[in-house]
Image (cartoon, rainbow, N blue to C red; front, side, top):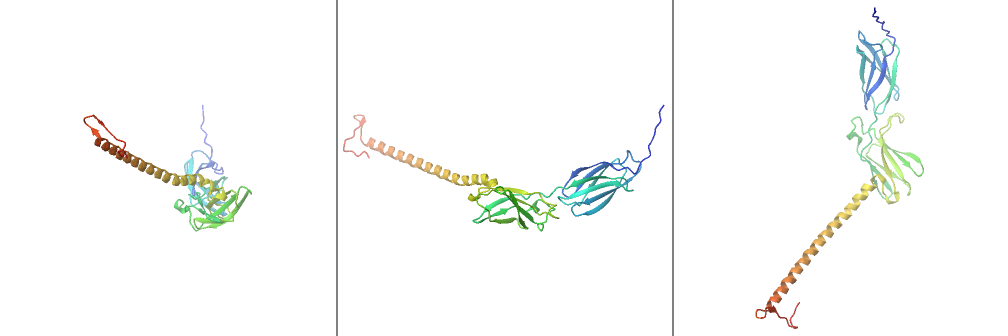
Length: 273
């Protein structure tokens, strides 16, 4: 004998297994399961998104009869921090989680140009690959002195270059450039880092190998080309001189040939060249 028992649904239970499926720069996909298996009617959920940086709240309503619910939270900010709460619309027990969106990418092609008494940092505009970045936000630049073990904030700019002065000879530096941090430094872009060594020779370590290879190639290739051209011309001159001497001697020998004796006869007074 057996009996089938169906439990009365408890709408005071919280959603189960709340977790993040995928997170981007401006969105987050979250998923959870209903408070009990196989709901027999639509269930209304309240999804509260608290911006931990801006200190603002937004509430979204989601209706579903599925046991597993997937929802995409949109209009988030890159590098933001959020607290997500999901519960039934009757304000039952809640499930919560924290989400950090993906920050803006680091600027590309960061390089250094050395001047007489300063250096210039150059990089590509972040707006070329980040649609969520506005040049008016700008960039901020930091410098780390490995000898002094000190990190300094150099300033910010809306340009794609920055001038750095008053560097000390013999010190090695690391420079970072990133999208300017917002709201008290809580929302920043990924930093692009460049090492700068051998200040006395005006070289930076990240570019020194490629720079040296380029410089060596620029010198060696023309020199080798000139050497090959010179050798080629020298061989041609020697070959022509050899042929001219050979022809002159043949003509001279023929002029002294005696068919009766079958040989060429030279006297000591002949000019042999």
